[in-house]
Length: 101
Image (cartoon, rainbow, N blue to C red; front, top):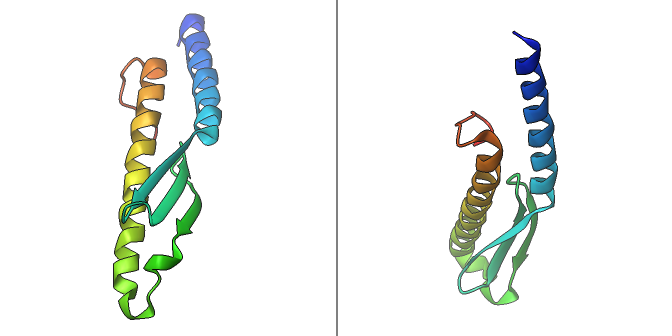
């Protein structure tokens, strides 16, 4: 490995570290049930909060609430992944790096 390649690898690592910090600050929201369940997630797909409207809390219909929560989490995850992929695409030049893109 020559010195130029090593320098480029270090620059890429620095850019990726910066992007990961930025993704940690990014916030997206997924919702279900016309906003009755909202999930807030960061750009690294970590759930920050879950808000549930009291209107959908019914002990006799726990399965319905579970489905709404899963749907909201799925929506937030999809949004977060799209934003992360877009942000990392510029850094990696479209190269598919497992665990990053």
